[in-house]
Image (cartoon, rainbow, N blue to C red; front, top):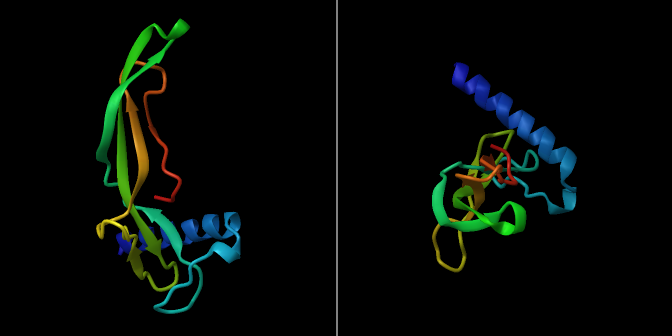
Length: 118
């Protein structure tokens, strides 16, 4: 019961944020209930996408090793709970987006770069 309440509260908050920040012309309507606009959400898979070094500090003399992670995303209907996972039309698999970065040495540290609600 508590998980259901938390899920409904999270969806309603996501819906409020989404509805207030996105024009209705870009909204995706729920095909299941037609009750309203679906909300873009992140699945937070954090699958390693790439890793490498970048320079920082005075004249770029210091090196930082960074890891970049990707995650799946999709749409959730705040009214009926229907889920539609994003699919990649070219490869036929899941569609991923840049979600999280981890920097070992520089002042950036670990942070969320995901543009979607989670």
